[in-house]
Amino acid sequence: MDLFRPSTTRSIGGNYYALVLVDDFSRFTWTFFISAKNDTFKVFKKFYNAVQNEKYLQIKYIRSDHRVNFKI
Image 1 (cartoon, rainbow, N blue to C red):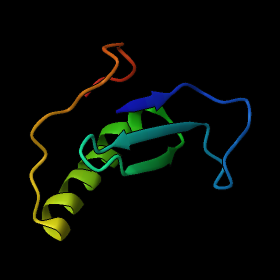
Image 2 (image 1 turned 120 degrees about the vertical axis):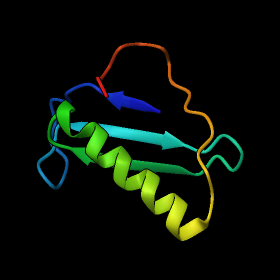
Image 3 (image 1 turned 30 degrees about the vertical axis):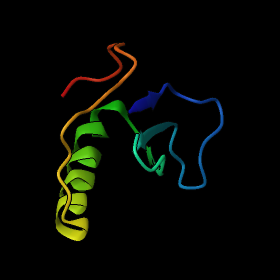
């Protein structure tokens, strides 16, 4: 999991931040573009619920680079 700091270039949707989630087993990557750091938890919560409901999987561990990028 990593949260990109504000980019100088906006995404197509007009967002400056990007949240990247990588599955360590399959190396599948999800990228979510968000407008502010404060939206990170909302986006992660939606992702978490979608993984549990659609794929019938449980997220057991969350690994990051141990920097304090956002607060939950």
